Structure formats: C-alpha cells, structure tokens
Image (spheres, rainbow, N blue to C red):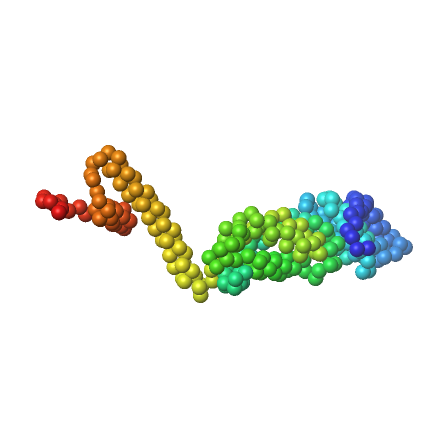
Length: 282
C-alpha cells in the first residue's frame, strides 16, 4: 500500500474492559490458587500497551511487523493491537522562519535572502515512509527552493533594465513562484504548503556599501532630472509671459543671460542670494 488509509479502531473502553477482566482473573488466581494468575496479569499488562489517545489535529500511524495498517486521524480514546508500532504525527499548521542564506541572483550578485513558510502534514503515509525525517526535509528543501528562485531573478533592475520582475520589487509574483516550487518539492513528503513569503532580502555585506552608493547616485540623478525638467518649464513660461505682456524687449543675448541666471537659481542646491544693483546693468 502506497497511500494513506484512514481507519477508526476499537473504542478504548473495550480495551479497558479487557484489562479489568484480566486483572480480576489474575487476582482471583492468586487468591484461589487454581487459575494461572501470572498469565492473566501479564495479559493485562500486554493489553495496556494497545491504548492510544489521539488529540485534535493529531494523527497516529500504525505499523504491524513492517506492514502499514492505517492512520488514525479522528481524535479520541482507542485500543489497537498491542503489537502495532505507533507513530504520532501532528496535523497542525507550523511555521518555519528560515535564517537568511547567501545566494547569487540571476546576474551573479551575492545577496542574503530568507523566507517564512507555513506548512502542515496532509498525507501521513508519505510523511512517515517516503522520507527519513519530514521536518528536516522541509528545512532542506525550503533552502533549495530559495536558492533556485534567487537564481531566476535579479535583485533589482540596475544591471537588467529590461527585467519586469525582480526579487526586491517582485512582490506577489515572486512569492507565488516560491510557493509553486515548494509545493513541487514537498509533495513527496505529503506536506501541504499553506503560504510562503520572502521575509528578508538584502545585498551581501561585501557589496552592500557599493550598491548603496549606486542606489543613492541613481536617486540623485533621477531627482536632478525632475529639477531640470521643472526649471526648463518655468524659464519657458517666464520668457513667454514677458514677451506676451511686453514687459521687456529682450534680444537673444539678453535672453541667454536671463535663461542662464534663472537655471542657476532654480537648479541650485542652496537658496539664491540676490544682489541689489542701484545703477544700470548696461
């Protein structure tokens, strides 16, 4: 059998009755000295081994001399064959908050990336028998999936400007790919992936300083472009209104001087310091 089989064994109170009966016969044998008391007392101890208590969102996998018998998933008090090996497997949802690991992104930059995974056991047969340790399997495969995902996308679009999805800005698209990869990897262990998210991402320490300066330079250039664009518009508007309202009659040289002065004032990092000229400019 290579699939989970859910069973509902004998109620535990039936086992309690058998244990009490065996104990009673054993005690009677000791008193009357004609019943094999040792046998019934040993039988009572043997029957006690068969008791199983299954809590809510827990399960118990039963194996009889190497043969899979079934899985108890319904919570309650039961009695099973005492010769069965019993393995408890929790069906509760669990969190795996992985430590950030160093990987290389699509363009080869070393980055630190970590994930948080919410998972639970869905198929107890595969969790118990298809892998050696399903909890350790989740940890190892989560790191492997994270490394593979990081290799498919760049950290940002500095070096891959045509890339639409990046690890830093991909958001739900990247997380969706991570979930798909994890579901494929953990299916062999009967694990259900409820949610997977990247919870930490940064450049590795050896290049973090250089990349930070690069990001700052990019931000400064973008800000300068906006400032120049706005300054050009204001200068154009000023010249147009001066001409339309006939406030000043400027030749090309005067216009060039005025444009130069306005651009310096509007694009400067510091506030303008006006100079009052009491005489003529010419």
